[in-house]
Image 1 (cartoon, rainbow, N blue to C red):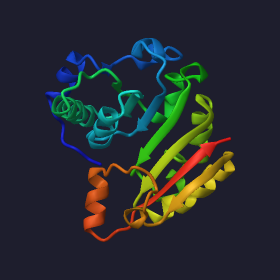
Image 2 (image 1 turned 180 degrees about the vertical axis):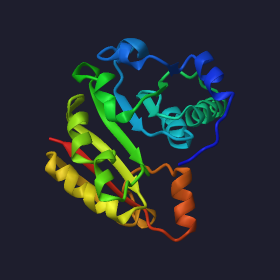
Image 3 (image 1 turned 90 degrees about the vertical axis):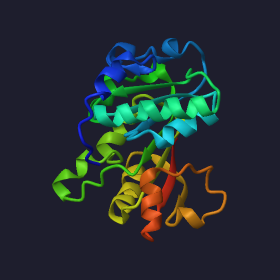
Image 4 (image 1 turned 60 degrees about the horizontal axis):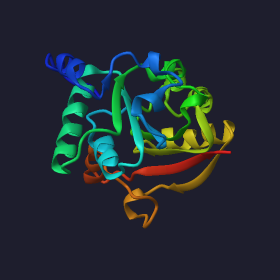
Length: 219
């Protein structure tokens, strides 16, 4: 998603207690940062933070790391997180956001971090064949995630793009993941998971586009 430059974003992020500007320094040490042994979950490409802010405030016994590459996005996510925690009358104590290139994610996470879950919501489908390797669900990326995921870890994936979804099923299988659940119409799937709608999801639903989703586990 393209977003206009927001001059306030970088200063606000640098002043925030839950923004990490140097994530490489915490590789293998994220539990020390959270100061507890609660499970750690990731959102890759958190955008404006609508999803991760609700997820984190609803689940105080889980720690969250949200990653994006664009300061403007992270600035909006920071404000959204503050809003959600304020409404819940909760201190922001179980989430950190950081700016990083997900293609180099192994520079900031390792097996010692014991990551148990990844959320990937409406990532860039990179429809041109020569760009497929940039997909966050591509086999090349999945192999990187396996370097820091615990056995039995799960990846929750949602998209509106048929081509990306069908290709991703193949990617997961090629990388040794098991597809536990799958749907081609999430809105009409009862008890698939406790779904939190993203801004993209609401927009696509309004356009009559069906949302595809799956849960893949690492065996």
